[in-house]
Structure formats: structure tokens, C-alpha cells
Image (cartoon, rainbow, N blue to C red):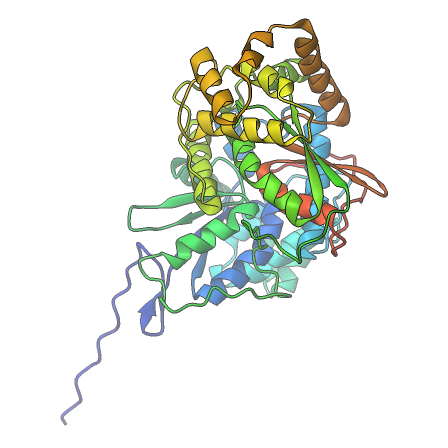
Length: 475
């Protein structure tokens, strides 16, 4: 009897993703460990993003402790001020994303057994099991190193608890988890959450749940992306947050005499990025900016921080930072060139900024932004008197100011600014201080400008919660 010809199955290019009906999907590799609260936030946002873009998540459970040990990193190394800020940041993100969060007093807890359970479990169960494990740790405060807790979690995911316990104790599963962790290291992963997306030029690595808007951009430009996918915002469904370049969120506010103290040093490329945005943000929120130069090297010396933190990073993290800077500059539509003289000598330029006027003066803002552009857009030497004189002339300030940079009064003012910043809890730049009815709020990083905006206007995020005293582990 004659048969109709067989219909061949579609070819599956496993280098890019998994087949779905009649097409191949873009894919994002998601490296995570249950111990990290930022990975918990990512686990709730990434599925919404990928569903909208018709992309597939390749879950990659690894041991964060193994990664940090291999790279000689300490998860919370640095000043106590930075640890306290990390706690506030975690709580702010939970509020911003409207996600339940209860930091366990015993945090960080051991997650080796939990990650082995995931490694043992069938892949089809992973999304459900991952949600259950994160909920157990970050919502219910359970000890996920307790095998009885893991048996219960396995049951919730529809798995046989006896088989799950055997998997947790299996030498083969332990070896497989170590192999996965070593593979992550070979891919350039230095912390969690990390994401890898293929592109026309090869794999691109992104670090941190606050970079999911960059992951989205990479998926939209993936070789297998659907061209007509709208760039819509799924409000209420917890997509990656809208970290907007200007125009900023919400209606423009008339001058309310609010004030942002902006701590900066020209030596920081991230402070440069903040400097390109802070005036527009303040203007949109009816606020004034107090440009407050500090000597970052002096602050680091006082706090015991490496004088050039970038040089203390692993090679993989250094590569990421340089790429991250370029991505943010493109996001803000600002020129950027990593300084060829890095680390940059900025003492004279900082003193010049102080001499140019009061913190909220237009002259200081104009000169500071011009000096930032000299360093991080034009690759010039702001330790060269000729460069400084030219910039002074360009912004309409007298070149005679340069001769006053050695005055004891301006030296003392720079030291005073630095000491006051440290007393307020500043441990790096860019940092921002916003006065609120309940007290002052400090923010760190140009990637937290949306929190600064929230502090300046009455929107739903609660920025005043008191942080827990335990120490978080994050990438």
C-alpha cells in the first residue's frame, strides 16, 4: 500500500536554542544560586521577559561559593558602609518590584544541598522547583540546607521525596554540580545572577538583575528574534523595571526646593555617566543638585578599600565592567572612551571644581561636566595645566583659578568634603544624598538613579525601611 511521504522534522540548531513548533527560539542562559537575593529577583522577572519575547530560558544552577572561591573573591568584602548599603538596596528592589522578601537572620545559609536537588531533578521540573526553593529561602525563611525541608519542597514540585534525598546525597550529582560551576567559570561568569545571550558576534554576558533591560535588548537583536515583537511594558506582571534614560518617569514637578547632594570624583567612569544625567533628573523632579567633589582615593584609604578597585577584580569581571560602561553610555546616548591614563590623577581638577563656585552654582555644574567629558569622552589628561586652562576658558571661567589650586583653604575644603561624605555613609562614587521628611536617604551607583527619582517624588516605593543586620551574599 502506498504511503504519503514522511514530513521531515525541522532541524534544531542547539547552538542557539530549542525548537518550538516550527521555529527556533532565542535563548538566554541564566546562572543562579538560591543564596543570592538578586538572583531571586531575576528568577521572577526573566520568565515574563522571555515569554513576551518568545525566548527560552536555559537554567544553569551553579555554586556561587565555588565561583567566588575559584576567583579569590569575597562576596561582601569591603567597608561595613557598603554592607549596610547592600541591605538597603535589596529592600528597595523588593519594594520596587513588589516582591515578597524576608531576609533570614541567619543569612547567608548553605545552599549546596538545594543546588544538588536542582541538579538531580528533571529539567521539566526546574521552573517549579526553582520558585519553590526561592520562596522557601527568601519568603518563608526556611533552612534549605535541611534535608527535611528539601524533601518537602521536592514534594511540592511533584517529585518523589525519597528519590530526591538520594539525589542530594549522590556523589555523581555533587560532581555534576561542580562541573556546571567550572563550566560557568570558563564562560566568564564571576557572580550571580548572570545571563548569556548569543549574538551575531558571539555570546554576550550580562551580570545583575538590574541589567535585564540590556538582556532584553540582546534578545531583540538575537539572530532568531521575531522582528515584530513590540517593546511593550507589562505593568503588574513584574517585567524588568523601567530604568529610563531621559525623559524620566512621571510628570515634571515644579521647583519644590528639593536637593540632591551628588558626591563625585572625576576618576570614576560611573560618576561620569551619573553626571550626564543628574541635572536633567533633578530638573524633572523640581530639585537642585549640590555638586560635591570628594577625593575618592582618600576615602578608599580611610575605609581600607583597594585604591583601584577595578584592578582587584578577576579578568572576567574587568572585561564585563568595560563592556557595561559602554552599554550604559549607549543607553544614555553619551560619548564614552575608557581613559588611557587610568587610574586618573584628579586632585587639581577637583580643587578647581571647588574654586569654581558653590555646590548648587551653575558654574560648578558646567565645569564639572566639562572636566568629566575631558576624561571619559575625549581621553584627555586633566592633570595637565594646559588642558585645565582650556576647559576653564571654554566654560567662561577665569584661567587664573588654576593658580589658586595650591591654596590651603581649597585643600582643606576637599578634605572636609571627603570626611563629611564618609561620615554620611559614602563608600564610593557616584553617591547621592536626598533629604526626606523621615530623614536623609543615601544611594550609590548611577544605575540607582530611578531610586533617587523615587525619593524626590511621592510614588509607591518605600525607601525608609530599616535594613536587617545580617550580611547578604550576592554577586
